[in-house]
Length: 294
Image 1 (cartoon, rainbow, N blue to C red):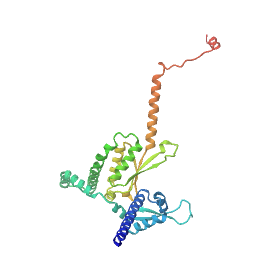
Image 2: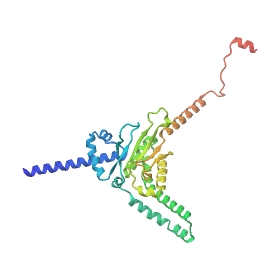
Image 3: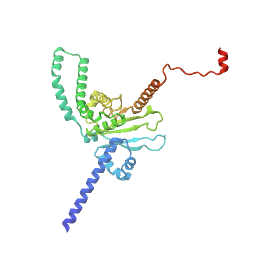
Image 4: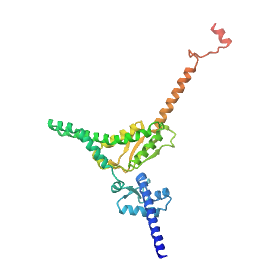
């Protein structure tokens, strides 16, 4: 009987640890996606008390996974700044990186460009020329790195006409590749259609250190996003430049407005083609007017 009691106690303790771990992962995921975010906001999203959320946040803060960011209120003199939580640099490392694939790609690129590098070294280049060569080498590596992602996920977006749906699918692809992808809808209550947009966000960057040293990685990733969505996009922020989330502006409303205008133009041309030939209006003249004209 004593053995059964101890076994049950051990099972309960294991279940509690697993439950704690699962909740902590959910808290961390929301900090990645929504940070800076308060404990109260996290509690509402997870249906937990603020005290229960703070227990996990305190543990992750001690581990250096998340950090506190004090945010001042909108009104001056509204009291002390509120405590918000964001993912830390160590937290980004905990989420993992993708340097193994990057190194493999780099080795392949270096092998392909070894002959060109030999020619440059023999001919002699200046400091400015060398910097340009280094930048172009980094760009070539970035293109090769993101080509793998593009080739893998382009097929999943084919045939998806709705830009919102394509963006959601791309966010899911980024999430599957370890970039913690998600979307935010912006201006959806605006009466001006062109003001509506979607923000494609990445809460984690597996190659953040490399991208910080070589911004061309962010440029090439943005170009890839534009190709996959088949629309011009604009990068609003990157983790490589110090932001907590990489954010790309997708002009959903502008595309919808253009589609509506194209539809109206098509309908107008059909209406014109259906009108009587000659396009002349019929004028009705009264008998008195006829007398004056005769």
